[in-house]
Image (cartoon, rainbow, N blue to C red):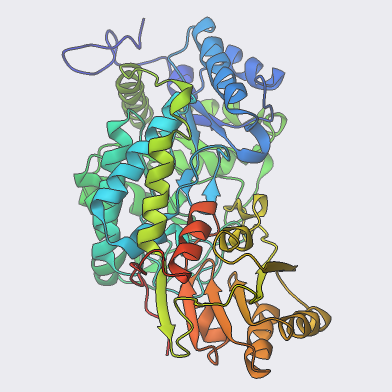
Length: 537
């Protein structure tokens, strides 16, 4: 077999060159819709051509944990029956706001880890994420985010980043990579060469950054260099344009040979796998079957191209790319080098034993999530001296929270409602909750203000403080109701309502963060977190 593992070298045995079609097939990461079994189109694609692997998404593929484990096993069985190497099975299981596996342990996200400043916690969370992925048959985690989030207006990275300092992001990112890969799952540092200083979302268009190489070496690149030193198995590209690196052109990094081969491979000496971000994002031109985009990415130096289109739309892409390679428009030697890198990774993954399903959400992992949450909750200011809460038994508390929406396609917040009110009821029996839209209108603001006027204290959560959310905080403060504002996502929310005197940050809305916030507010736990970003004055 071409892909059998060599124990002495950790590489595939036998011929190191696959037939051209098989070598190109290894570069395809496909997706499909199906929660209990692979779709017929996916099974047909696996049987018809060599496929590098699949990417699983929450909406498309996540049923129960048992269903998911059976699904991944069925995919691997289909690959084996077709005479293929084992598949790469990938998912975005970052923690925080992007959790492809919703029934996994609800770990606070990277910015919460940044608030703890703890490499040990980052490593332990990485290992726990890796073990849970492995138990479900997921052998590639598209994590961690290695972007330095130094732009408060960044709509797509935000709390997925460890913070705004390259040194902190480097340390915690390398620690998480070590943890993930110790569990036998390939980690992925993303999004190269750095998506943290954008003010637009590459799901909708290509951000253009003016940064020089000197700037990149100082801020954006150090976390990726740390990831390379940590032995990261994959690095994911960003669909951002850097004209200073591409002779003035606005070609996205994903399609740029200067960035992928020149900078990442040659200058940074990276010899692992380069995987593209999803090619269906509208930072790229959406041509027929994405064939041109896939060809450009492969020519630029990508080893794996990620498709998130319906498989029927991709029927022409593979034969077109094979024909291009046969005509010499793509380098066959680079295609073979990419397939070798992929097969080496598959051989490494094949040596790992699958953990039992019971490890997903186990007591140890839940305790770890709680520890991260407790050590991350941050008290920014308490000029009103409202904390810790010392309320009479008959005191009434109103909790106001937005109903979360997915702010970008890279978000799973809509699956949750913050459980802050129920967490506070453990300590304060008379707690009521008011849910408001993400973008409250004037009538919502009036209703919230009037309701708050009948309570002894208001705790108001905001998520990326839209104008309406900020108006609720400001109106409640103005009418004299003692008010505690909580940034449930990005810490920058306080800029939208500077009049509030007591202000907290949780960096996420998952239950462990809400439990930790409630405990700290009543004095059962200290406020241990430190802001991992600077708040504009």
